[in-house]
Length: 142
Image (cartoon, rainbow, N blue to C red; front, top):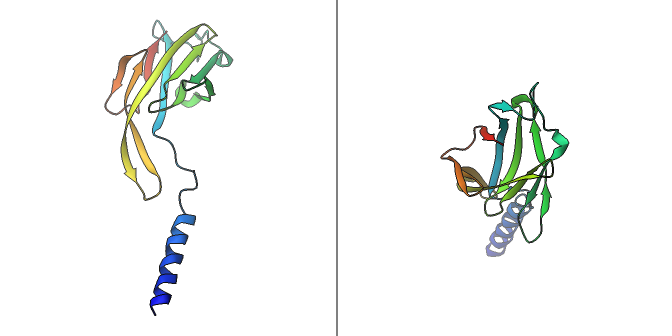
């Protein structure tokens, strides 16, 4: 009976490990959505746009500059960049303009396998541009 209990416990632990946490968890960070504006008008979308989507690139600041995916969210006419806590992202526009964005996060939930995060602040070039719940689109004058 004691051996049967050990085998059952071992199998239960093995199933828990195999069914969970295979690297599919998101890192501490979040998607930051931006409206890139000039004089209050959208610079990427609409009749007053002057920035081509191909001219917008993002790079993660780490030991080397790794290009990051830029998400163009047409529904909201915004630009989205995923930023990890502790790894600022440089947003480059038309190969000239570059702003550095950084975030802080808090843990929102843990399901025993992965941890959820919420962005609590966004900094642009070291200046705080959002604090609290930063899920709304942030207007950026360029």
